[in-house]
Length: 137
Image (cartoon, rainbow, N blue to C red; front, top):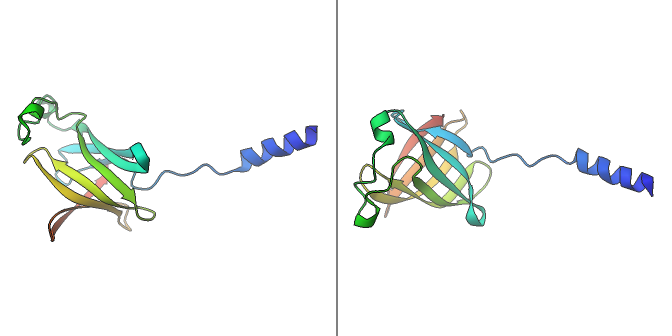
């Protein structure tokens, strides 16, 4: 019996931990004005919150461009700006949405890790898409 317990403990210890998806972590936007932390959220999806803003005045800013007047007083710092991404393979997430607090607009979005370790963030309206390259923060 003791050998069976020891074997079970050794088997559990030898089991590799699941690595986080390469998209997870903190990412700096192209202008270097802010960082977003991408992490798992409800339902096996991926979401991102603003975690840092270069300009201290921006850290106190509110979501004044939001089309919903009830949301215009919420702070930008900590804002959920990316949500609903579904895994589409290692380093690839689709079906998400991204909110631009500068314009108050929301776009369909997908994320892909580039070969050089940067993150391709695409936002689309209808058939028109635009991509940005973000770097690790």
